[in-house]
Image (cartoon, rainbow, N blue to C red):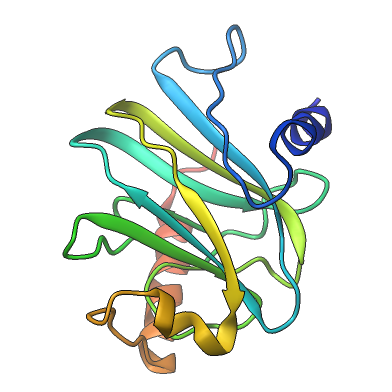
Amino acid sequence: MFLHLQNEVKAEVGTNVFVHRRYPGGGLSQQIYWPAVFELDDGEVLIIETDMPKRRHYWNIQLNDPYFNAVEYVYRLSSINEATARISPDGKLRAVVSLLDPGVPNWLDPAGFKEGTIYGRWYDCDPNPMPVIKRVPLAELRKHLPADTPAVTPQERAEKLRARVRAAQRRRRW
């Protein structure tokens, strides 16, 4: 079922382009999904950029492999949400899908996959902006981000990952 959904998105808009989706009978009525099929090569990154809704009850972005399985999310930074993301001072979210740590906030680690899907969700948000994806060389990433984008050191990244692992360990499991 999910592979079919992924292929529908690719057939409709191609790769590295988001589309809004609702799934009547299979999704939450107040939720707008924004899937994209992603592709990138070694030495490239994908910059996801979006305005943020004024009212945002919940939102997230997650990466999936080419078979629509969630990329490892406990030991890799393969998803973000309001609690884990950094919103830029201009009010926009910028996330970076990269095979290597790009040293900026909101890294989405695809775990070595050069293709797969990005699934975003706006739940009970107003408005529901359409994010865009820009594919650029990793070496030119900083040219495509605001000048005030902070650097993230390897030590800071390691601490963020440790915090993620601790949070996952505290989750109630049934």
